Image (tube, rainbow, N blue to C red):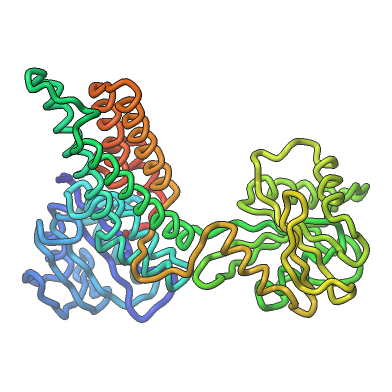
Length: 454
């Protein structure tokens, strides 16, 4: 339990019909009573006035009191529902602070709920994911994670690993039992069952992460290849200016779309070429910066003038002053197929996928959208999914790696001691997901990304 009381505006910035201010902490009830002059009954909606220290009525609204431990944070919580003007809400918040509360830090309410065992860390992150969802499927997945679906799957894995670890360590501690790990069918069966469970959870988590975080798609290529037209075709409206003049796009353009529930963050960049124009040079520099951070690159080639699309790719990479920061997959878009004899199609040339499209007419755009879903392993989301983050995927990968390493140690050398140690490390990695084992630095990073009042 914290010894101080925090307060924050819990509704979004701006004007609205209703604005909510939340209090949490040991003095929440007394501060709420002081500002409303009402004896707050637990879980009862009180229609009341909100007063300042001089007795002046600041506003009229609803007050609610939730005593500890039966509240969101596990502490005494008071909510004041006032009119949603930013000025009146600021005045009420200042008055609460004058009575002894302090302004809450980002995510501090959820942080207290986690510390008081009301939610685990995965559920806390799901709150932020639910608020920041950009698609309906992402919101549904985040809601299921908030209800504990993802946490239950992780806890199930932890129970399986713990059970196996207890059996192995007991056998080590009591050598007179003479248990042969290699010949013991129970150990082998449990290992295989846990590996299957890991694979099932990983598959769902990857889908959840894709739905929640989406994919960064950078459109690159020579001037006038049709990059901006492709952006407009994918987004469904005229986001970018399209002209026959080379170098029309000088800065980075961003657009957010979704394909069957998959969020796509599209970045259109300046045409890549050698230029003496200082403004265009800056646009090209920014283009390469975006390319370096992409999840996938769409290299647009004018199919009407360039027959060897792979040669265009090689020339561009040679012009880059530094190598790509990492190996980023590339899809070549052979544009303007309406001006050539090539029909919309997906081809494989050497190591690159080439898609014939006409960004102007829209021909082949559906093929491109299907390709984008396929190349990252996305399937249309369903209610059986949950939200996940890259942090969760990394922890799952690490835990699975420790588990497989322990299995290998057992098979190759019959080393039960090494298996037990790897099971311990596996268990710790899984615990990082729900917060069973978490460093203060990790908690600080996660909750600092929350909005104030949550």
